[in-house]
Length: 251
Image 1 (tube, rainbow, N blue to C red):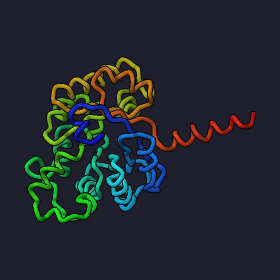
Image 2: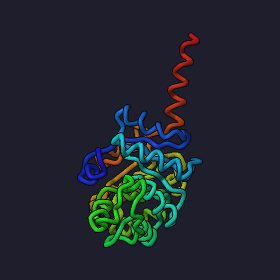
Image 3: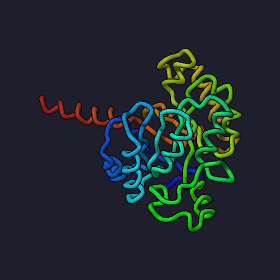
Image 4: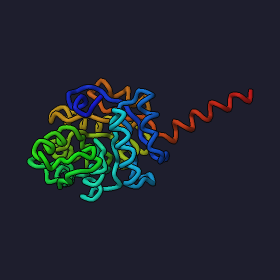
């Protein structure tokens, strides 16, 4: 699976990495058959150096490497992309103005205003300055911009967010969305269903990818509604589950 396949409507499955700093985690994920991993810089302790190492390894292996940056800023968005990731997710995008800033910092002209670093992890250390227009056009197609929808304010402004040129995907963060809607942890509450349905509808209307970060049951619930960017669990609970299974050897 490539970002291009996802943009063409195919489904992709992956997980979040919050704890494991060894870049080889992308090889483990690829060998397991995942399409992508997403490093969590919002709640994890990763440096951009780790992200650059992991993304280069991911490119060589043929698995997509995404990152959730700590917050919306040019330094976070553009630098993550220059580290070679093929997707950036910004948490808690609230409105169309924030979505526009995100797109400006993530996409090259004519879509946005991302600055061109002629060579680096994002160019696989080739000199993109030799044919900058071709590189920028291809890079705009090959990277994924993901607006994370996890606030009631974002639901109110979902049409403006979804209509933003340069935003590729809308991804539900159910934990914080439930907090924002006053129904913490109640992921099947009618308020959640109504809010998520609005996001799914906006994604369809504006030809954006609909995404979710959730466990299997909640993911499967929304798959019939066009959910194709399917991120489930994270390294911490995957490792914990595997370790817990070993305890059966006491019996």
